[in-house]
Picture 1 (cartoon, rainbow, N blue to C red):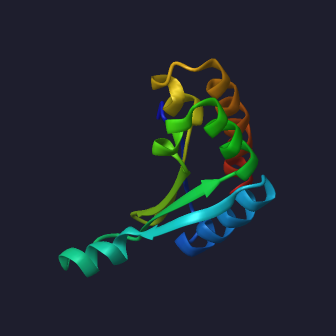
Picture 2 (cartoon, helix red, strand yellow):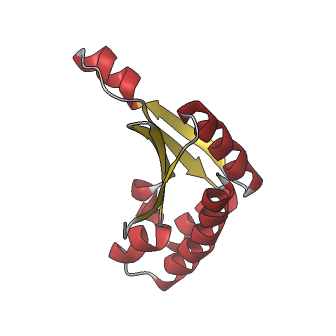
Length: 128
């Protein structure tokens, strides 16, 4: 996937979410938003679907630097991390900030995105 890092694992869904929270915290990220898509689809549309969660992760210092570099970048924050069921496996995907920021022509912002991507990749790699 060009816009994210993705892997399938033989680890229970809830365990992957727990590991993701811990790994993100270790890399300096907080979880600003948490959307239980399965729950929302049931609540709003009466539809059943597989377990699927979106975690909105933010590193405060890098978010600050990004906003200084590009005031409207808040349209693309926070960094999304998703976990969902795929058959008997659990899938983890993390956004690649460098890919997401390519549509913004700003060298300073790209530098921040590179730092954030290294941190997110470390968190991603720690989940196994």
